[in-house]
Image 1 (spheres, protein in one colour):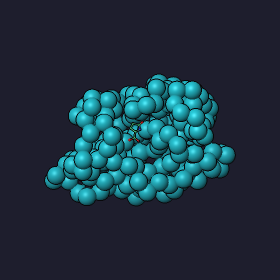
Image 2 (tube, protein in one colour):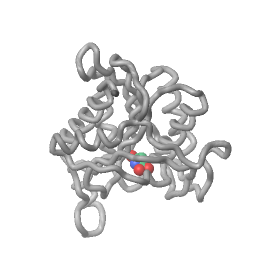
Image 3 (cartoon, protein in one colour):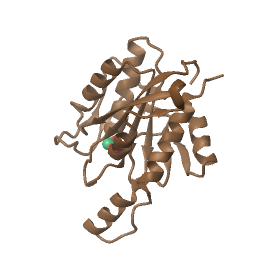
Image 4 (tube, rainbow, N blue to C red):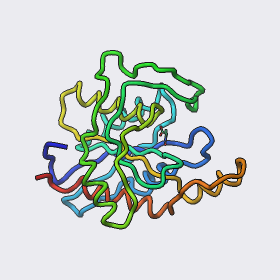
Length: 221
Ligand code: PCA
């Protein structure tokens, strides 16, 4: 991230509904817990939450609706990356949908998200500082160089593409979170035996995202 934004800011926080074999999406619980919160006092960040459908046709539509309604100063998108051991700040989104079926049964094979868009967009959030702050608070975190080619990459790409094409200065980016204990337990009991998913307490996931938002609220030098 290279610009500045006001100390008093509106942050749009998105998460997703459950998808594929995951009966729970911990990002839904994070967004519900933080919706309406003010982080950093009266001069801090006010959070508005949006839960998106895991649907190539309607996922970004829902995010854009919330974006246009809230007119946020910052956009932080969240998604579940079941199997990853820590919080991962995504570096880049690519112009490609290529995946297993979404919740509406749509399984794209290498289609561009926007045929007129750039091949990729870098996150405009301070990903290094976000990861460092998480580690400083004792939470495992890392930068990820691929958000995949499913819904998370799709909405990250589409949001950054929209921001670029409308020539506004709104920092935006994506953070993947690991499974919650609840998801790991339900996955272990519903699928074939194997190592359980790495998982975190939901309260730690919520706390970690608050730390990330705290970083976004710091005035950039
Ligand atoms: N994770 C999926 C889509 C929805 C979610 O929470 C992904 O990583 O693309």
